[in-house]
Image 1 (tube, helix red, strand yellow):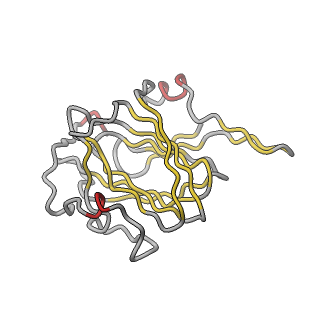
Image 2: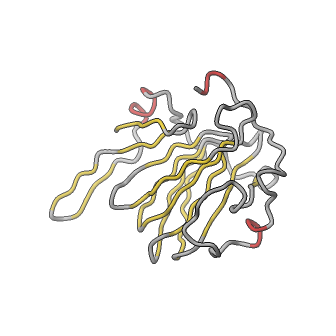
Length: 185
């Protein structure tokens, strides 16, 4: 596994080995030893997936403390434009976003630390996203910021967004409970 810095502390783009032959392909998305050697979390509390059709935008989501979590995502089928926004007060990249093109054919994995909002837009006819998180879903801590408030250049002006996601506060109006710590560098 190749682990690349993304420009936001603690957030990494992971390029796994992709084995292809005439039958198809094989990808190992998680290996505790490889993750541990890089200082990444190796214990997850929940795993789930979402299926989206073209033009669906999910996000920008996170869980607040004490139920905040690290999230690992990958696209198992199709293609998405994936985005993270740094919400950690005191972070040198507070309020900044980074974009990633996640495609099943490439098998790229995104490692997202606590304190970053996450979302994506499905670019292919269908997209299947797989998630691992370090805490279980807590409805009281499940929050977000509005998808169009962080300066992200989404490829569609009017994506299909849930009523819940459309009602989130803007980044400007969001009071962050997250704090940047030096050890997150």
